[in-house]
Amino acid sequence: MIMEQLDQLKPFQARSVIEELRKGSVPVDYVPFFTVGREHWLKFIDDDLDNYIAEGGAKVRFISGDYGDGKTHFMSVISNLALEKGFAVSFVVLTREVPIHKFEAVCQSVARQLRGAFDGNGIRGLLDHWTGGLKEIGDIPDQLRSLPGMNINFANALIALLNNRLTPLAEGEDEEERVTQREILFHWFEGGKVTKRELKPFGIFEVLNKSNSKHLLNSMIAFLRYLGYKGLILLMDELETVIAHSTSIRNSAYENVRLLIDNTEHAKHLHIFFSIIPDVLLSEKGFKSYDALWSRVRSIGEGKRLNYRCVLIDLHRTPLKTKELVALGGYLRRIHEISYRWQGEEMVNDKLIEDICRNQKRMGMLSEVRLFVKQVIRILDMAEQGVNPEELDMAEQIVASQQEMEQEKVEQLQPKWDS
Image 1 (cartoon, rainbow, N blue to C red):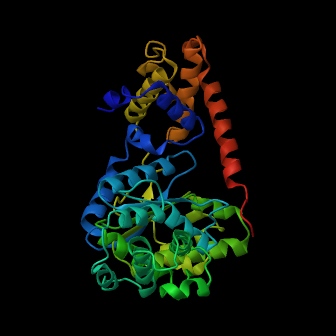
Image 2 (cartoon, rainbow, N blue to C red; image 1 turned 180 degrees about the vertical axis):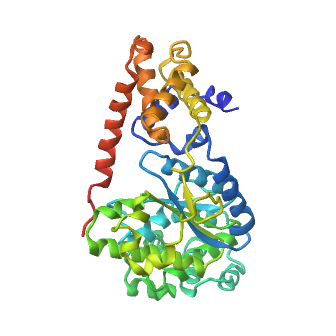
Image 3 (cartoon, rainbow, N blue to C red; image 1 turned 90 degrees about the vertical axis):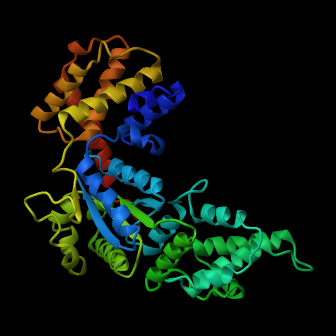
């Protein structure tokens, strides 16, 4: 089935996939092509989405794995699954521009990365899609104000946007003025800085902050439910980068993680996933350095036996099997063939891909999916250029690929956030 889909790729599409894989990421549109293994984890996440979150539940889970274990890819798989099921999704990568220790910045990114059954990303796209499909206001304001969990400021902002879009221009009013007002409202929905004077005409008396975040988050979920979505899935990637920073930044970051966890206790139809490395749970600079958070999460991952329903999704303890990696290698080979218009199966056959797995396993690195992907692409590149893969030193190829990954890891973990 997947091979049939891959065969539909055009050379430029295939080349784009290969180039993204070289950089260590999978293009969002092609995530299903690389979803091998992890079936047990996905089975229980699937069940949670259908039978708990969609029914009104809320929870937080942590996705743990070393660098290269496929955490970001796994989160992309969850994102695709949730979108297919009718949830709205926001996938936030915690970076210098979106530092977890600055709560408002994270909330702004949640709003701007929102995806669902509308074009583009962001709450602006959602609101444009909603208002664009309406002919008249009718009793919508009353419906919005009466929604369970709806904050009056959020409701008034929605109603103000409806009036802005659907009511005729008043005498002396021009379209430019409407555009300015609309921009103020969009900026408020995105958690941006707006003055009270600008907001007062719309009946909005609060801007986003830590104290009202749970009310505004619940309002967003209530609105999404009103539009027919089953709930909201938040994916927070690369939380582990906080370990490299000063105590004050770490404490602020961990306080915000605690706050997000607490928010789920007052929410419905919400699931939050954080990706971490094991050091976040084990290191003295990790969660245990902040008592208010550690008291909430200290028991996760303590069991010796895997529990696929527990709070910790431990990818490192559930690596892909050799047969799954060989299947993944076959998909990579087909994309590479389309990309560079050549036939690679004779030179890079399944036996050779098994040899790559065997060498990684011998060096204690079989679980590192990113290393495997880099290895296969490197060898496909050499073979396409006429080099016989049997003449390559596989151990040397592993070391070269590992050095690339180590450099990526160093760059990723460098302290970059403003203190």
